Image 1 (cartoon, rainbow, N blue to C red):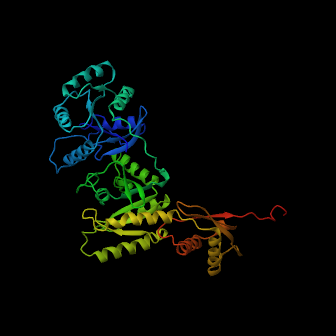
Image 2: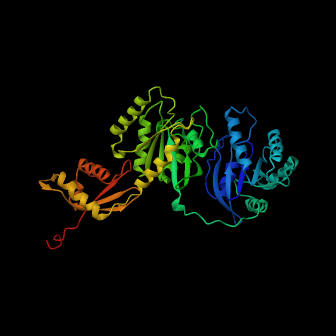
Image 3: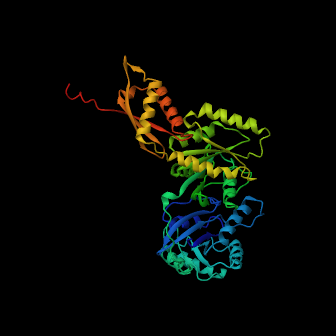
Length: 446
């Protein structure tokens, strides 16, 4: 396990900007708005030769536990509870506030090592303002400007000095063996509740308010077959409804997570059914060539479950023929019903997505498929398909060679894809069929 360095402080003191600077990349959303970060965001970083797990947290505020601010504070407190070092960030421009003093006292009671960081301390004025932070009783403050990159070298050195002694490094896990999984869907489809249930802890903020998750948040979990990197994402709305600024960045982060995933769980609210927006997200998953599992969430709520299930299956068959046989899991993240079936379905979809078919078996099927339904004519001459091979997996991609193949109708290509899916047991996987004109050996002589 890497040492955990948690960045904490009240809202809008620059925690996410500092997180990105230390991580060396734009890992967290940053905007000039308090409360952008709601869930804990994690990233690995190399600081003065020490590899650490950085955790960005929501702003610490005094609020009732049931309120959004109270739930955000609870997730931040959970991160502090497992930290090897806490970076408590205050704002040099704003000066110390009663909230800073309150949470500094709270941190002293947690029994965790704390390093006081005074952010936005540009130039001489900022360094002088940093001296005021001694009053918090957290030791010597480190003055930085995360926005301008000032003081970061000193901060990294201090972090390395405050970490526990380095343990003997375990064998590194092969990154190719970690299954990359993303959960996507419309706002309020139950994505974060599902992730919390899979983890067995309240890692993500949940509630009745739509759009609680703003950034793509990655966590690690294990099942019987190995490690999974799971990313929860912000809800995807229709493009016309997406507001510029923060929501646009959240949508971009969600789509980016989808593109980086191997398997995507599309969360659909069972009480609302499969909407056109859900279908658009599914088509995006198919276009990106990702394996997909459909999770019908909130399955404890529909009054007529048989009717709800039948309606979804019929809509899938009518609107998503290119994902025929997609895995469907009925579950409730709130009660836990059916959640144990999700990861096995993800593993099955991943296995299909990785399928390779031998060339001999492929061409035996090809001959039979052409015999059952011969290719059509083009300008009075039959389109000739000669042989087929698999170019790659992830997703299964096949290349058919022949003459005048550019004239092959879409309907016949769909016939070949559906026949491939049935013959080699490839349910739900996006299948790519590419066509190539083979060279005519007599063309040069003519």
